Amino acid sequence: MVEKILLADSGTGRSEEMLRALMEIPSIQRAFVTVLHVVPPQVSSDTMTEKWEEGGKVLAMAIQSLKLDPDRAAAMLRQGDPKDIVCKVAEEINADLIIMGSRGLKRLVSILENSVSQYVFQLSDRPMLLVKDDIFVRKINRIMVAIDQSDAAKACLKQALSLVRDIKGGQIILAHVTSDSKSAEKAGAEAEKDPSLAFAVAEAKKAGVAYRCLVTGGKAGEAICRLAEETKADLLMLGSPDRRPSIAKGLPDLDRLLGTSLSDYVRVYANCPVLLTRTIG
Image (cartoon, rainbow, N blue to C red):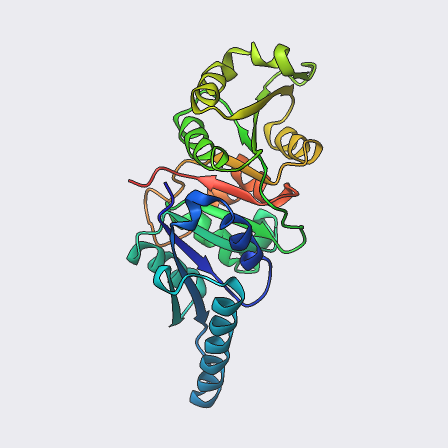
């Protein structure tokens, strides 16, 4: 259950729109929202004062625009490197979900351009909802979940069902990608018989949630993004294991950043908001 949300608000992008769409779901309306704006270090005290005042205005406008319940919201203005501050505040408030805007930069570019969202995704073990600057945020009705037999996917399914069952007329799209690139796409009753979807179908029925099954072959990232576009999914959810480096938590794991991570591919190429779920230890 999502009880504490951290909205990292830079004053640009679509993160506020994403929160508004999410807050239409009854179960999310009970969550406490912390709106965070970070002022980067400046070269002079005068500039710092100016940026601090600007940050305060960004927060005030965000709180007013979002129309949050004053008893269930807080505004937080911090100074420092945004990458580090977002991770630190998420730990401080024990956030169940981080919402951030994203430019959708590819892995190497995100490193070279010091991407905040990529850094936070890499070093935080918190679930993250990423919304790219160039997509349209729609009311959430159709939630697509990438399903395999991993524990991460099962945990993701559980969270997706908790959201969909609160949405009037909502539907969960259960999508499985096989490694056989020549596999024909299956849908409906034929796809429902797929062994990889059996657990997901049973859980959807148990929750009383309307569902749709899809099975296709090919490269997982490409297939998931294509299915999300074809089904006009309003939100794509993906189970993402904790990716913090095992040797040094304070440094990005370049091997993973430059590798072929499914989560990285989907966050860059999906044409809808992407919620990367994790189990917080």
